[in-house]
Image (cartoon, rainbow over all chains, first blue to last red):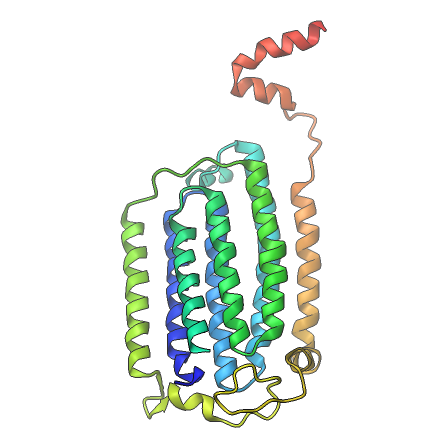
Length: 103
Length: 213
C-alpha cells in the first residue's frame, strides 16, 4: 500500500477537522476557544493543500499552505488584541454578549 | 509511512475533539498544540519539510504561546454548559455528514470529472524536482534539491507578488494590534478605580484604608 493510497483518507481527515472546528465555532461561548476552532479549520485546509500538492507533484500546494499559515498568524494577533479590549470593557468573555458593542 | 499517517491523523482528530469539547480553555489550547504537532508530522510524511518546520515554529511556537498567554492574562472561567440549541444540531449534523461522506468517497476512491481520474493514480506521475523524497515508495526519486529550496524558488519567482503582499499584511496586523491594545486617554471616561467600585462595592473599605494612609 503506497502512500498515495492514503490520499482520500487525508481528505477525509481534513473534512473531519474542518467540520469539528465549525462545530466548535457554533457551540462554544468563549471567544478564545472560538479562535482556536478557527485555527483548526485553517489547519484542515492546509492538509488539503499539502496533500494535493504532494500527489499532484507540485510545490504550489505548499506555497499556498504557507500563505494560509501567515494569514492565520496575523488573524490571531488582531483577534486576540480585540478580545483583550472587549474583556477590558466588559469583564465578561461570552460571545453572545458581544452584540452590545453596537450600542 | 502509512502507519505514521494513520497514527498522526488519529491523534489530530482526537485532539481536535478535545479542543471543542473540553470545558477549560487551557485544556483546549493544549489539545490544539497536540493537534498541530500531529498535523506537522503529516506534513513531514507528505514531503513538506519546510511546512513542517514552519508549522512547529509559527503555530506550536508563536501562536500557541500567544493563546496561552492571553488565557493566563484573562483567566476565563470554565464553560460548564455548551450552547445546545438549533446551532448545535446543525453543527453536529454538518460534521457527521461531511465526515461520513468523505469517508465513503475515500473508500470508493475520489474521482474527478467522473471519468476515472482516481486517487490511486494520482501519485504515479513523474516527479522531476519535488525535492528530497522522504517517502520513496511511490516513485523512488531522491533528488539533491531540497524541499526548502524548491518551495523558496516558487515563493520568490512565481509567487513573488503575493509573498510581498504577505509581508504588508504582517506589518498591518502588527500595527493594528498595537493600536487596538493601547490605553486610551479619555478625560470623560471614569477612572479605573471608579469602575472597579461600581462593579464591586465591597472594595470601598480598601479605598478608605488607602486614603487614610
